[in-house]
Image 1 (cartoon, rainbow, N blue to C red):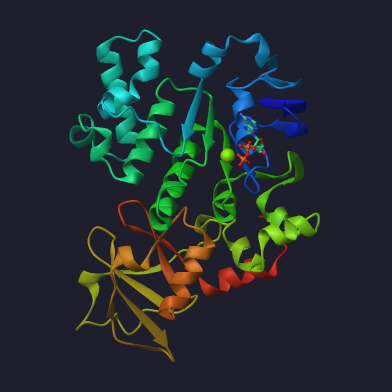
Image 2: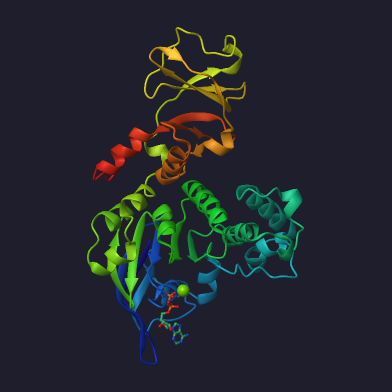
Length: 364
Ligand SMILES: Nc1ncnc2c1ncn2[C@@H]1O[C@H](COP(=O)(O)OP(=O)(O)O)[C@@H](O)[C@H]1O
Ligand SMILES: [Mg+2]
């Protein structure tokens, strides 16, 4: 757990952090957000003593960080920044091994750990371990930056606008991967961003700052649902209802889907006596359970089977309801398939599910 107790940071007359008190729970993602210059980066860097507070105390699992050697602290806390900071002349493997080397791990152990982490972040070790940073795309470099921060398995990760330089589509993928990664690793994450959508997607909790102070500290649903004041309302912007959908994963409200294996079609149609509930949508899957077609039943009759490309139509379990809605509306469908990582069908999310969430005050 990380605690801020009346923390202040002054820079010759400018108060960058102005009397902040907070308790951040272990294993959760807390997002600091706010306009440029509001003190997000300063707050983050106070935690690993890259800078020292003017007054107040920060504790890590009960111990004031001022009592822990800065060096030791930084080795025990992963730090990820936007420009990644990969060393250009070092290979991916060497970059990931920087902290382990400082900790005295031998070459074999470092190499093994690097491969393990590359696997974890979805980059094939054989293809990536010997690459140099300039041979990576922005998104790949950012993944390696995350791997490097995780190398010595620190319990805490500080991330300062880590995905800010990646294009929107790539950023969404990184956010989804990071969310799923942290479900497994359960690191205590302090994440800085100025992108509200990112904060809502990732945060278990959002701390909204202005002029060095905390304006609202809440779960995302409440930041959007009950903004404390005009500043918060303005910061959130007009499309609150839509943004609120980003708070919910598809997983939290998906339904079982009606499924038929392709081999069981009769003259290209589902068996006439096959009934389905819900939206009347039947997903046709191949032998590997990947959707290849869909068919609607209305007035007791099957329509034609339409071809479906799973990766274009489907959403993932950790996609947001907002993503699901844009697929649904874009295709004029009543349901979209939910896919596991191998594109296997695991359920469907329906327009009615999304309407229900939008009408609830739903702190799901
Ligand atoms: N090293 C520094 N010297 C003087 N002022 C600084 C320094 N670092 C940050 N500041 C000031 O502190 C305030 C907060 O900065 P920062 O924490 O970087 O904001 P954010 O990350 O939210 O954009 C800003 O007014 C900034 O100009
Ligand atoms: Mg900053």
